[in-house]
Length: 440
Figure 1 (cartoon, rainbow, N blue to C red):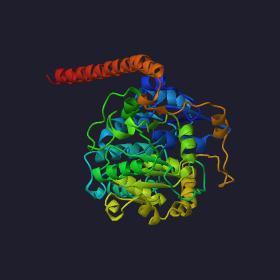
Figure 2 (figure 1 turned 45 degrees about the horizontal axis):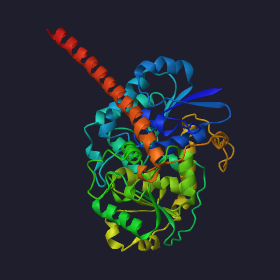
Figure 3 (figure 1 turned 90 degrees about the vertical axis):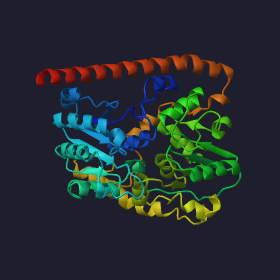
Figure 4 (figure 1 turned 180 degrees about the vertical axis):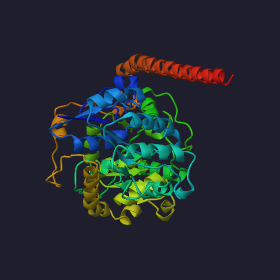
């Protein structure tokens, strides 16, 4: 039996209720991470393969245990080449250098402004170089999310198709080689899924609010952990966003109770199968729709969204495009929803080539058009928790339980995290004191 360790906070066949997820962030701060992790696990989990979650641990001291217990370490990543993720990237580099098993990075990308010249570089270039070199000592190629990331790595000295290849986002390959979207046909009661990230602009947010005013049956689908807390407790606030972003419980979407926060991938998939259209600035929010046969429109606002929407031919527009269209119906008339279906088989085949280049066996060996998977049988046996509805829409008894039990758990979690931070700071202080003593 082959044992694979994979970067994730939870496995697709595991279910956790809201109390567990309040106690521990298994989403990596964004439940969109559930989707590409689900896809990678579904693809690699054969009858003779056991998959184990690393629970987002990046501790280099775990290297000995990993070497002794696993045959490979799979690290699916999103836009990990960004300022806020660099501390984690450094930890991964230290850990990977200590490993003597294959380490395969799937789907890593760069975060940058929409038209930024990536060849100018960033202040974290050396960290990216160190990470890439460490990974390439343990694998043949790194899989990238898009061409902009490829251009960036090439400017750092890495060679296309030797050190890396563009594979897009693995979440697109969740259910295999073929994608078939239903036709877009909307009326006042159509179920529309709306999403927005915290970088959304005023005009885009205004447009999304306009959709919610016109269509009776809409839901806003948040993804960040902070939004889980807002929807669950009714307090907290999303900061550093445009004024009309749904940032607090008094915002339109929350007041109307038209918010769903998904705790797992399967219930998210089920919801999207019933939806008529998904639109917004959340990439994975729209990819969930696409892979489940529902048309989507991604409003592209930065380089990471741009490279992925271009690679997968996702139906997309820019904030500037909105000025040319008076309403959603005009956008739908001017978008080709079939392109993503046409390019997908070729993209999927290349993804399998990437896995095979890294000596990874997958469920599609011998049948690229396979539609079932061992993971499917496990998932079907589980009763998953339904998405979290807004606190304003539940009964007084449910509200009391949330506020008393939920807040107690959340408070304990914060205390634990604060104690951990204090411990790390004390360790850093100790190291600095030792260095000062040596200099004397």
